Length: 465
Image 1 (cartoon, rainbow, N blue to C red):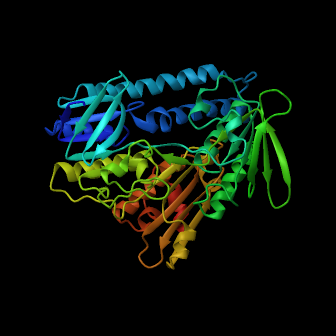
Image 2 (cartoon, helix red, strand yellow; image 1 turned 90 degrees about the vertical axis):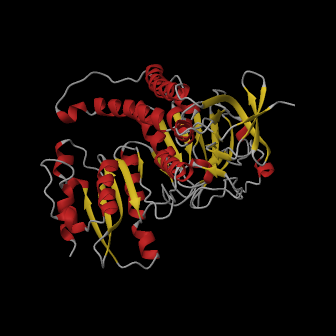
Image 3 (spheres, rainbow, N blue to C red; image 1 turned 60 degrees about the vertical axis):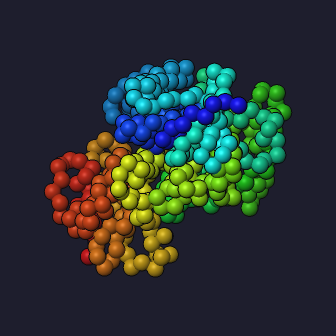
């Protein structure tokens, strides 16, 4: 029976919420144990934002190189060295991760355990350490930041063929000849466009009627147009029914799909599953601690991020909320405020922005037009194509449009979607206006430097009365 090591707090998972919170608790004088079973930094640094956006940047360089003639620049043949792309990605990930590891190691009062944690009591966990020994830890405050992982669909034959996930696809050492992608969300779109630009033939199979299903129909349609223009094949309202090894004997895959019009078999060299994620709660024995989960396995929390068990909190993707790094980090700030002070921070009325790093980017915040109308809101909608933006034309990046939803009574901005060059940055300007309670007229009449993307907001709102 291992000796129980007593701490003031235990944090399980060193992601974008758990790592900073463990450090903050220790710096405040709370003896803290931080447990991580895979890598410091969580999905964002190791398998998500950092590596994917690094590879997106490489793909954009290839795209611009092929378009050089459009700008009056002559280049030779463009080829992609996937090994070098991967090397660059690995180096940046390693730099970010080791920086986080150094901060943890330098924090007095913080003990790091590398291993898998499971609950053995309401406020007690065992850690099966990578070193081979088992440690038993206890604390009155326990925080779960254990994240999620790619989910596998229940598709006949899926276990019999080589399948890529959003993690493993970033380790391929050559450009796939024909990449099949299951899913139509941000992960599918980013990788689809990326590998098309690297030189792959790409087919996206989306079960629903539109890509990025949370978006308005016009936004989803415009995104599809962008991908199709880039040479990506997009199949909507199409369900996968079976997958098998290619009969050609080349190690590829055959994906059987069905739609309203036909049944067909797609043959590709690689298959990427990008159709969802599943929480890492099945490894924790949460029932022992009295922590309740929903039918998908995500942890139920209140607006202060406390679980059904008093003194146990959950942060980040494992709660089933918006799975974004910035939300996970805000969860950290809420927990820090409430655990280290008299604060009463909550997730109530939190503005949730996000960006899809296709090219052009999609930046989104607040209510969509469809959601606002479904809520019965009296609204005005300002919409303008990027082809009306001088700066976008100057750099020959005029695809997409801007769309803002405004409350008809107050003139307050309640939502925005920007599919266009630097769409995430333009969306953030609109979010700042929302945070500051500025009416749309403040942006309509504002003086912005010329020629910038920001000045497009003058013309965007000019049509509203």
